[in-house]
Length: 347
Image 1: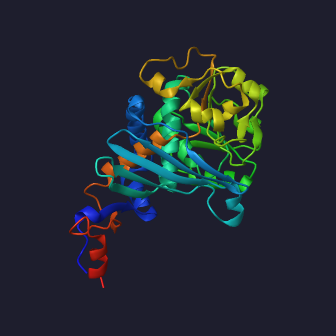
Image 2: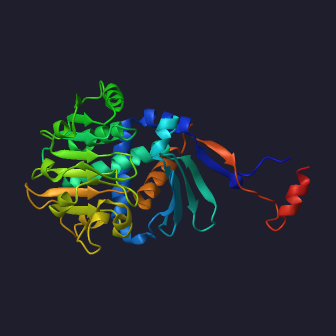
Image 3: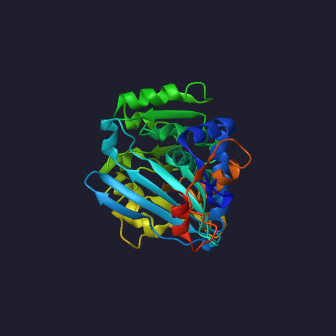
């Protein structure tokens, strides 16, 4: 058999290589760099094909495809969300992604995205926080201390000046895990026994719980004026974290309204309730925080452009490094019309 040509080889970033790349760059630095790529792409929002993610729901969870294209490159992410998985020793969320050249249709990158999704979600949260959070915010409440929590804390430290995080989870073991992982990371870390305790003195509140249900993680009386709420746990139909009255008091900011109205906190509101799209804030077309007493709410569900940005970032980051391998993914016969001949010659 002949060796595959370069045209047939696709760069692949495994979990091991992704972790090596993160350590090579640094967690906070990589989050900051991904955020910069997301901001760049949000500022050219109208260049992208946009569609709500394509879900396949089951009693056990959801499997989704998240596609987009800017006309030159095409990207998609496959991702699942299965909250019951942790009880079986499995990840709640796993993902992989692909980037392709629109001109040829050939893939140009295949990568794990379980780790990368955590990084890009944290990058998006902190990027939005840099636009909406109160000036000089130093304390964040992190409610829900699962797989995403450490990434969120380090992102807000790196990009928004947070130096203290107050942690709460219904599972004390999750909080203990988060406390241990954040040791020596330049943060003051406080484990809290109640969500009320966690939000005490916090200018930023991040909610990131996994249960696939309408929950009330924050009640209306828990939220005072002037805070920024980063709500990232409500990300599918029927799953919310905030009492409806909080939404009615807040300036609400979203990624893509057509998706957020199906999956986000605002599914609890009327279909025409006003929201502001973050890309418009980033290009100066819309106003972010209006005053010191305004409650700002980022109703984040994750959108395909963020994954596209992360894929583009990884494609550039691995060039000239040892943090990828080549996969023989594409048939490449000498004569493009003779696929069968290629098969026969392989005997």
